[in-house]
Image (tube, rainbow over all chains, first blue to last red; front, side, top):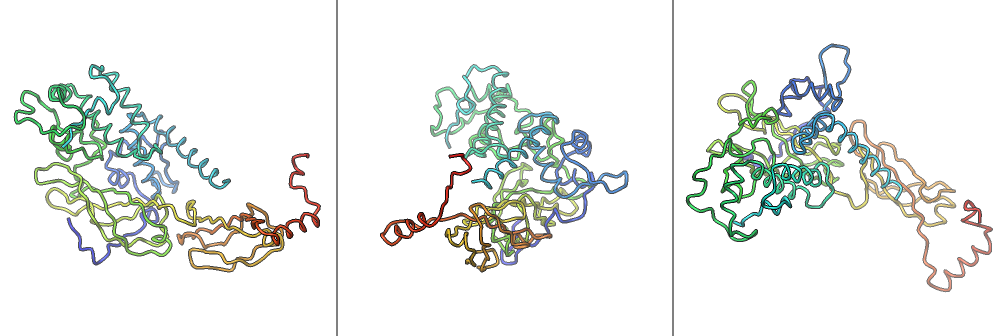
Length: 103
Length: 320
């Protein structure tokens, strides 16, 4: 799987690509589609409203989904716990930024 | 290879119950989880704890480990005896689910992480299996210099990627890739390299590689999303009277106009001069007032003259 290092590989910024389907997000995160549905139901990740019944996610859902799956697995949390942890982590991040701005 | 004392790693006595071990694991996992912890060596500690738990939570592995561990203090040079493992059945060697790789010590005792795609009861999390003839997508995280996103350009990235070895086991290998960093990428975003993921078993196309980007702290600029912040020291007269001062920005030095009557903490915005994402971020300059030292007679005289000339009480808002 080695790649010649003289010619740089180029790739796009994933978050700027098209919206994702449940199947795509489930594939990239290597998790069952049912589990993606559970994450949405618990409010861990949210869908983008596009006016159809089929669900779509923005690219930013990738990072959040993977983070949620890691917390769930490594800390043996249930989904409500994951949702709470993510919300608190965001709050801590926001406070940290505010603190930096003041100092 | 050093002998690892898994009881010491978990901070539990050798006769700890399964419940105690589970409690200890949960506590340590929360403390050192790399996504949560701010401890310096969180990732290494988390792996160590995960490995210890992997052994101690399984009655078979724990019994085998205990038998082996007699008379081996932690850190001592260690080789597994030739008859190692006889009489013990390790169901589904390795956890299969963790991204972390195990130590040489662990692998010499219990093998690698088990076959790709092995189910461990929560197997839904680890799709070693290939859907629709495509290889699995891989994920990695890199720490880039801020310049990489400001200007774009090729960077040598050293990644740790899971691979399937000749025995069908999942191992973590170091892989160096020369990657063109897309200009304007933000922290938390991913570079998607098509076809650089795992090869499928049998026919099909390889998966993709997703590289999550974070930035190293920059010596001048603080990053917040797509915006950049700079603390700019100015002299009291520059802030009071206004001035044009030389200011570093990502696109080069500019003459920044400081409005008269500025004070410490005043924020100036240079629109569109942040990270060149779409839309581009802004560049914020926060003013700091730097006082010239009063370290000679001339400077002291200037301060004295200012004190005499200005009826100024900096503590007026404190009511004194």
